Amino acid sequence: MTKHFVPENPNNLVKDCLQGYIVCNEHLSVLYHEKVIFNNKFDSSQVCLISGGGSGHEPGWAGLVGNGMLAACAQGEVFASPNFKNIQAAEKTVHSQKGCILVITNYTGDNLYFGMAQQELLARYGPGHVKLLRCTDDAAIPRSTNSLVGRRTLAGVGIVIKMMGAATQLPHLSLDDIYHFGETVNRNVISINAGLDHVHIPGHAPDSDYGKLQPNEIEIGLGIHNEPGFVKLSSIPTNEALISDMLQYMLSQDDPERSYLKYDSSDQFILLFNNLGGLPVIEEKALLFQTVTQLDRDYGIVPHRVLAGNFVTSLNASIFTITLFNVTKTAGMFTEQQLFDLFDQPTNATNWPNYVDHTASTGNYKDRIIKSFAHYDEFVPDTTNDVQIDPQTLYNILHTGSRNLIRMEPLITEWDTKMGDGDCGKMLEIAANGVLLGLDQGEGMATNGSILTCLNRILAILSNDMGGTLGAILYIFMKSFINNLTINLGSSQTDIRLIFATSLSSAIETLKGFTKAREGHRTVMDVLIPFVRVFGDTLDIYKAVDAAEAAAEGTRKLAPKLGRATYVGGLENKKDFVPDPGAYGVYEAIRGLRCL
Image (cartoon, rainbow, N blue to C red; front, side, top):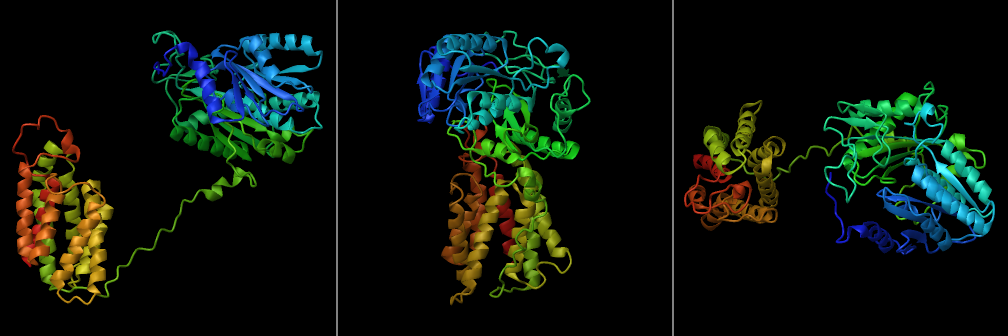
């Protein structure tokens, strides 16, 4: 995507971003002109870690500044290294007599500018006071081509910073101890990227050549600054196939070019899944799960920690990183458990997650995937207080109403096609066929003349078969009617007509809590409300059905105010319309009551 949100002065984008970080975290301060973020609560008795690089990789690096991680970072412009004087400024804000380690990404500009800063600081503080550690976790760079420049940095730098930063909290460790520990961590971290496209940099022409991929293309092995991958595929593979290829590049022990990470099946790992800014979360988590599944199935690796999210991004790139850290092979200065403790140590860095309880391995995730769930037992309605009528009359009411709907389906569908989405007729037909099946199948729902039995069977049809907005509205109305009828049948009231009228009125009031539609809005409520009202006023079912018919016909004069019909154009000056399909359909069902 070539569109971006930029301030009035585009040159302030990075500075505004850094100021945004300090708004979020009171432990951070910013050197505005130098574009430096630092931990204003830094304990100067500790070794200080400083990193940085081009902006556009957020939360790298500002989001990783905090206790137990970076003491400070120096940011450049988008994808541009910071000035060496600004790196020196970062060191000055968190100067430590114990020394400083510059943890950098292995790109040419960062090597040069952090190298310049290191030399200046060594001249000021003496040999051994400032060390420089390059993070080199990219599996995409083959041995045959990296002898001069080494491997690139991907999201693995986040793990290196986390482990080294936690180690700086231990007062007995020296600068050299922490530096050598960082080297060991770096050797045991490996990453690889895959992406659907490169990114457009703010301020560049939209049609500039930034390596844009075709819609059907994907690359494996991209960098974080639009560097192309080492494999370009002409069609996008499935998640399963893509993850399989990526893990093969990372973990194959037989590849002379890329077998950087040595491991045994019993080794313990940490998995970091990095979203470079443009991957939808639904895809991120789906790819993450596929990664965990294949690590277990194909390599015998069950990560003991899993982190996912944004760690080192590339603006809004639709790219992701798989990063693995072999904890077992890192053990030496620390035991495996101590390494996990360092990784788990809380931090107030803005973007490092602290929300996971690591008291148990994440390897038990399979136990938490429940594929066979015992739902609530099927609800058996209370029919202790029921209403019995002549079974044949009950059959005739339901059969007639259903046949009315089936007969009217083509016309209702035609009306709904003109004023809606065209599904109303078919939804009502499905419900009607369900009722007919219930009447004629087995014992038949009307056989014993039970009103509550029939109402509950109709309710099941509405919930399981009908669907659509109308199905949901009728379900709520019917369920509330049944609930109230069940209660009212147990009352002292003996006039069954009054019990039905009261229950119907309560159902209408319930339904009003779920829809803003009322009479005159050209919806099913134009039939339900007058039907219930007239029956309540007269206790005469035939007059109530007549009111429903008049209301259904009356929708021909109503302009739509709710629903999809409101989006139909050219209705402003119309006076006559087709009837509202839902309202007319409900009337046709109600018309079966004339069989009483």
